[in-house]
Length: 574
Ligand code: PEP
Ligand code: MG
Image 1 (tube, rainbow, N blue to C red):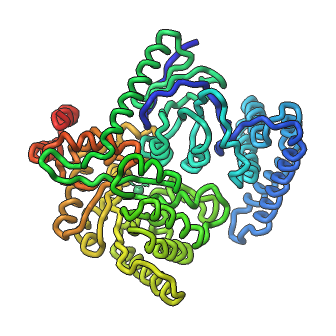
Image 2: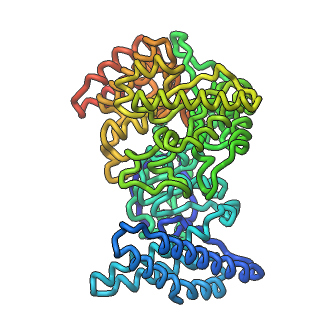
Image 3: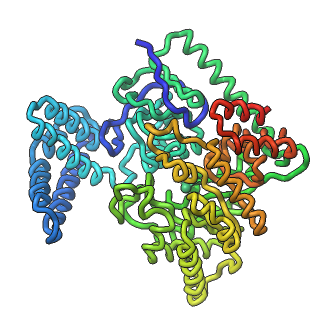
């Protein structure tokens, strides 16, 4: 049966391919076939994971704090009991043997079967015990998926495959980066979540917030994913398929045409130079940066070096990565943002997830609370600074005390490198991200103390409008054009200009060609974005006349009539 679904298009382009469903488990579970000769190893791997999980639960059981509620011990006993039950410890092994599937998949299938049985129980208390089954299985899955090398991420399926998931975390996306998927679609997620940002950086058409794709689509269904309009067509008929193939071709032709702009000078019609920089997450993104003709890297999200691993990257390992990026950029600026973990980017080690992680120990707050972790990273960045034009960027600054402490930590890292006789660029520029309304309203102070500012509009919008950027149920309220957001951007740009310090925008607004002229009109001269968007933004810059844009942008900033917003933006984009 053919039907279509609508969600949020988070990354443009059209993909046509066959559905590849991932498990319903909250940890995304890979599925692959094993060679007969590897079955024994897989069974041993499964047994080891069960043993490791048992050891973990027993350790927890022995370290229950004296003031913990009495139920905690009973709860852990119950989890140990479930873990020992043959339904969890043995049944998946039968599946591995019979179907030659991998251990994670077998366990996830067994979990789903058990959950379905619990669903049939009338007694609400007993029915709710399915949660415990899920939690125990999640623990075993974590033990199994620990080292990412177990995942079949370099499998070439031979045909175009589209990943269909209930939810994907940014860490999952990094793992899927090398898999040969043509597109991905999810039930949950928002357009500026880090998962969506990664999809754009991979240039992969993607649609999120489809709500029930995982339930309605079956493995191997033929799908069309239109990442621009947020549409997914399931099992299309011949005429729809032909129409989308045409659109897909047109998209490719347009993208190819844009490539001609790579070497043209980035300036407005009146000759004002506009700097177009790139955002990256991993060293491997550098090729896309070069292909885009970017002036440098305006945001290197260094926290991606810390995901999908149970240990921390050492100073040397970090140094090698930063150095490689600095060298690859060949003297162009490389802005390394210090660790921004927390909220939707959780590392498997360290802190427990708070009730409200976006407002918790995130970004610079986490780094200041973990001086050892921060020093290691600062030393690595400083050491890399001799290999290019490296700059340090501090995420989510809010208070003046935080800034003072951060600058002290950077001085301490400098001192320790001097003591060790290691070289670094003593004049390395240090900048701060303006991502919280309090920081925007104090931009004058931050601009005076720092060498540059960068506005993180993804978080600035989230914190100004009180909208969780990863929550699709409030995605319709996430509004970059809200006058409060535009005022904070303009206020920050003006504060930077007054202090004589450059200000860029590195949130997703900078990469949206529909907003380029608005940002130019507000006074922005440096944009940093996913390399995939850079030439589209350049195209807008090249046809802009600043004198015309400035008064039009002011009109948008003062507009309080929601019906006029689209009209004003259309006029601006002329
Ligand atoms: C932002 O918040 O706009 C930003 C660039 O940082 P991130 O998206 O990594 O939170
Ligand atoms: Mg941010």
